[in-house]
Amino acid sequence: MDLGIIGQAAGLFAVTNIDDILILALFFAQGAGHPGSTRRIALGQYLGFSAILAVAVVAAFGATFLPESAIPYLGLLPLALGLKAAWQAWKDHRNGDGDDEEEQTRESGPGPLEVAAVTFANGGDNIGVYVPVFATAGIGGMSVYAAVFLVLVAVWCFAGKFFATRPVIAKALARWGHILLPLVLIAIGLLILIEGGAFGL
Image (cartoon, rainbow, N blue to C red; front, side, top):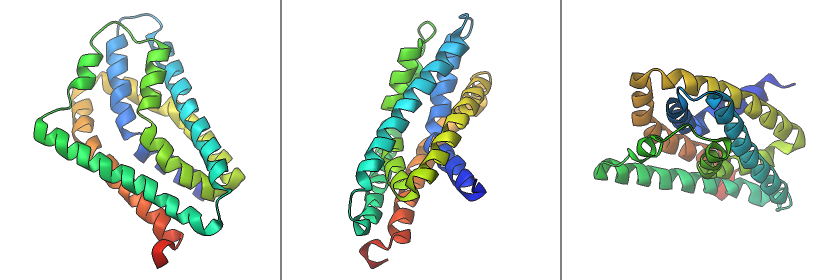
């Protein structure tokens, strides 16, 4: 197994799921004192992320039927998503928003379907990034990416629970995660465009 691909998969998962650690931390904080909440949250995270993976894999198989010269232009998708996320972060900063997620998590412990729904809804950007990466990785590479991602979901759950008990760290993530995500999406989009030679780059 290629350690380079494993490293790339781990890096891609980490940078596209920074915001998920904050959301998981909020879920774990909400579930504190409710028996079985850790199991329900972890199950929901796996359900939601498995759905994201399934959609990305199916779309990537569709993308492989495109002419080979067209595949590098799929980098426009994460680039556009990154620019959109940057615009949204800038608007939220100007308007002073960002407390919505905290207010939504003040009720009783979350169920697995609730966690899965939030994970999937929050994964739109992930799908946009994963599809062109999977399409260019081939079936073998795609399998490695999927396996690494599913292992790292468990790591993310542990990290979310860890941060849920450390509000200072969670606040720092909330502050910088919105800046990092757009930058990473833009970088991934540009990398796919440049490596594929799109627009004669």
